Image 1: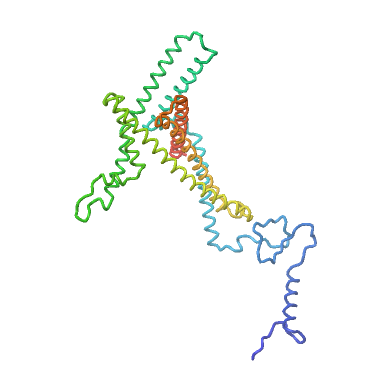
Image 2: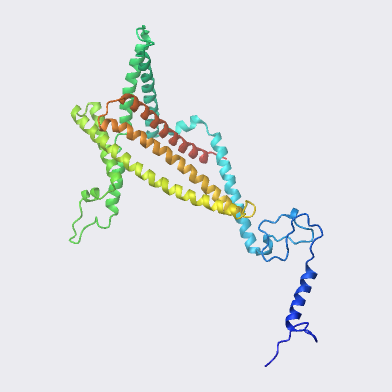
Length: 378
C-alpha cells in the first residue's frame, strides 16, 4: 500500500502531532489577542461574521465583514435598483400626502355633488341635522323649565318651515335613487348572456331569463327588488300610484333593506377577519425581524415593504370598521319600521340616521379627496 505523507512530517514527528503543531502555529501567528480587554472584541476568524458590525467595538487590526464579501457584483446592482425603486415609491407616497393637504374642501364637495350618490348624502346630512334640531327644540319646549312661557311667533314659523323642508328633502332623496334597480338588472343580463348553458339545452331550446334570475346571487336579487319597491314608494308620493300600493311597496322595501344589511354585515365581518389575519402575519414578520436583530440598515427591503403593507392594512381595517358601524345604524333604523317598535322611535331613528349620514359622507369624502390628490399636478 502507498503511504500518505503529511507536510512537516520530518524525523521524529508523528502525523497527528505534526498536524496539531501546524494548526497551533498557524493560529498563533495569524491571531493575537489584543492587549486592551476592557471592551468586547470580535474574533475575525469566526466562521459566522456579525450581523450588523459596529466599528466602535472592534479593534483596529480586526477585519470588518460586510455584505460586499458575500454578494456578487450582479447582486449588488439588483439590490441597489430595488432600493432606488423603493425610495421612489416612498417619495411618491410622501408627495401624495402633501398633495392631499393641498386639496381644498370646496373642490372635494364639488366633485361629490356631481354624483347622485353625493347629492343624496348631502341632502341626508341636511335632513337629519334639521330633525336633530327639532328634536332638541321639542325637548326644551316641553321641559318644566320652559313650560308655560310664551314662545315667540318666529319660533313657530321656523319649526313649520323646517318640517316642510325635511319632507321635501325626503322626497328629493327618493327621486335621486329612482331606477336604482338598473345596475343589478344589467348584472343579471350580463350573466345570462355569458352563461354557456343559457344559449340552449341539448334540444336547442333557449333557457328562460327567469332561470338566470333564480340563480343570481342573493345580494343582487335583494338590490333589484329593493330598487323596484323604492320606485313604487316614490311614485306613490308623487301621486302616480295609490296610497295603499305605496305602503305595501314601502313594507317590501324595508324588508329588503333589512335583509341586505344583514348580508352586508356578514360580508363585512368576513372581510375584516381576512384583513386582521394578514395584519397579524405582517406584524409577526416585523417582530421576528426585530428579535433576530434585523434593522432598517441590515434588511431595508423587507422592512420597508412590511411597514407599507401594515399601514395599508390598518387603513383598510379602519374603513371596514366605519362601514360596519354605518350598517349597524341602518339595522337599528329599519328594525323600528320592520318590527313596529314605538318606544323612542323618533329619537332613535333621528340619531341613527344622522350618524349613518356622517359616516357615509366621510367615507365618500375621503375617496374623492384621494382621487383629487392623485389627479392634481405635482
